[in-house]
Length: 242
Length: 62
Image 1 (tube, rainbow over the protein chains, first blue to last red):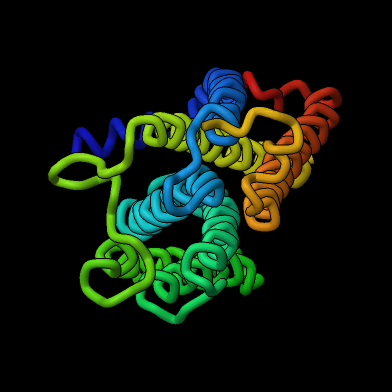
Image 2: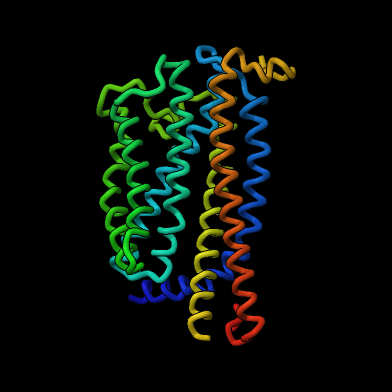
């Protein structure tokens, strides 16, 4: 109980706003620097693949986008659980802030994957387990956004969205292990492997820099959106009180 | 072998039709989210400022 109490104190919107103001310059500045380094390494400083040629450069935006899409959904599920079970004061705001950003990253992962698939597999799209489960992830995000705004009663919409966020969590292990469980054109895991990454360091480091840039960007945008929503709520309360 | 020369860089070993649209889609979405989120925050800050100017009790520091 003491821990939950402390978490609630930490999640106080006023404290979050102060924390957000302190964090945002570091998140945006860090993302900008890492994007500059990462894009140089991805487009110029890394070698073409001996089989895929320069199309391998799509990996440096495809993989980070896919990771952000899945991390975003894990956070969305956690926010949904926090909202429903612990009535966390910021959980609904976090969910509403994360969903469109996560949907955006899912779209980027799908689009860049299609553009990578055509020259390497010979097709933009195939209805296999990895691609289909990732498309389902996109629809889960869209469903969350739609449900949030579907009811006149804001709280009812947020509760319904929290439920879809929690139920949809089941899709994350399906996406992760789809390349092992079913036959697919998609390559199997090449970074988070028990025996270490199977990618050459000349490509792995640019990828890590881009993943770090995408991660800082993700949190910069989500924190900006959360801050905006909290200030909008404060404004509504102020306007109502007048 | 790295594609550092101007035309070679843009040509992307003959795969420019796939590489650049992929980077274009990512850039478009990421820039759009950054700009829209920042503008929404600025609008919220300005709206709140207008209220707190006329009623200091509603200030952010209150």
